Length: 245
Image 1 (cartoon, rainbow, N blue to C red):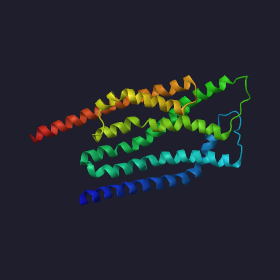
Image 2: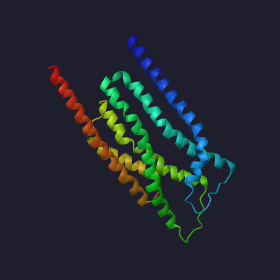
Image 3: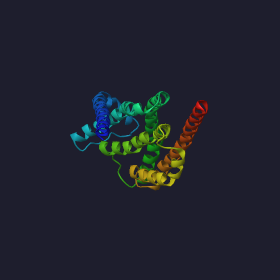
Image 4: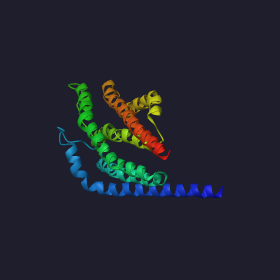
């Protein structure tokens, strides 16, 4: 019993170490993000017809902080993934270590791809639809705080959700999940994705549909990729057992 307690404490200490490294990395990247925040801000507002308004000096700092936080989040994803890999590494064999390590760069690029999808495709459609509702009815004025909150609510969640196929592949590779479980959980997963889409989009039907459909497609892609990984893993296990026999 004492050995088990020591083992649990060792795992908790290792987990604490990995979390601290990840948080420190985020803090460093957040500071570094402020170096590039102004050119990125200017690039994000380059297509606006008018300048954004601010209601106080604190709004400027808050907007810059939001942009820097997204930069830090993107840069921290590979670090966090590597820390997770180091934590589970002792439980993996040599082949699994090599294969799962290859997932880390893809997580970073999928996050960028998800943000790009939200910014270049979804954001203009939703913003254009909402502004068209006020055409000739209201005097439109955007504050920097409201504008960037709206922008980030439509882009950052997609950056994270676009990593869903890779995360489920990783969990399938570790044996935690399999395509059978994912198919059985489809209804629950769809419900959760609908709730997420409602929470991150403005309260209109078009925005919800534009978000829900890609999320459903991502889940189905996740099941397909999980099936491929599961079959390869099962085939490798069968071949190994046959060789031993």
